[in-house]
Amino acid sequence: MGLGRHKIKNLFAPCGTVVDVEIIKHKGGKNRNFAFVTMASPEEAQAAVNQFDTQEVSGRIIRVEFAKKFKKPRPQRSASAPARETQHNLYVSNLSWKVRSTHLREFFSANFNPVSSKVVFESNKGRSAGYGFVSFATKEEAEAAISSLDGKELMGRPLRLKFSQKNDDVSESNKEEEDVSEDQSAES
Image (cartoon, rainbow, N blue to C red):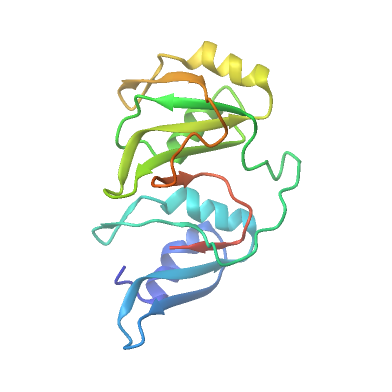
């Protein structure tokens, strides 16, 4: 990433209180191009993921996601801590290459209350595969979203919506960019 602790801290500061920045280096001291940023609360960490994941910083597209090394707390079933995904998943295709999970979430949130959203990325190329998933708490809300938004344009392309065949309709070779997680440590 080429950014020092101070620059990373300043970058994430608009999202909340940055408790710690740990830049990961090789044994020889060379930067490994990733860091762990610890925010003061899960909400602030989520804001950092939402704001910075797949954004360009210092000429490079960065990935910001919840760290895998930390044990994630069990999701609470409440409005303030939505479930990671549900059985009411919509498969969203014909996405513009520029669409990210935050765009999907905003698009559906205008009239509905999605539980989660994710855009799938091609692992070998690091770019969008042109499809993703949006999860809803109820089948009725998912059906209403299909009725209302199928064929509507997002970033210049008409979306195609249908119920996903299964909860994880993605092969393991694909990376996913998710817009929901419950841990307070974000990886950048």
